[in-house]
View: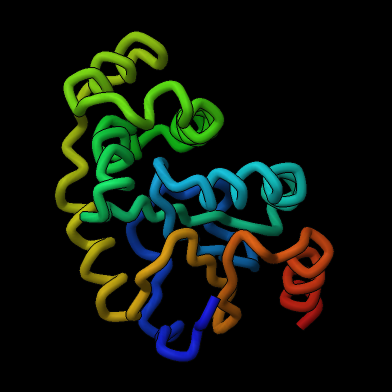
Length: 176
């Protein structure tokens, strides 16, 4: 991932789905689209490590569901607008479900995705439009183009980071 044009200083901990304690010393900001197979890879490979740090109150994850116009990712936008941002634990479970089941819903038509979300996760349309707009504007200011794009302060990475390297970044931040 070429990060030379990304402005990490323009990425905030505002908006998004907050998983973990606001008082956690390490903030991880994750721009994701639920239809992206690379986002699935990131989510699944980092889950056990990040869940441990979140449970210990050391990490807060701020997941920014990034609506993309790319045809292969537009279906993820539909799911994004059905998640309840006010219930982060349930939403985390829903994100895990939709990422794990991309092959089931990822090629459905929009109305069929809506039905799938209702049937499988009892979700209905939420009023996430304002947050979605703010995430898009923030991504534009920061020049974030690809998903996943993950930030710990000025460290920028994607799904290719190993759990060992991720742990090292978190531990380094904790020990400062």
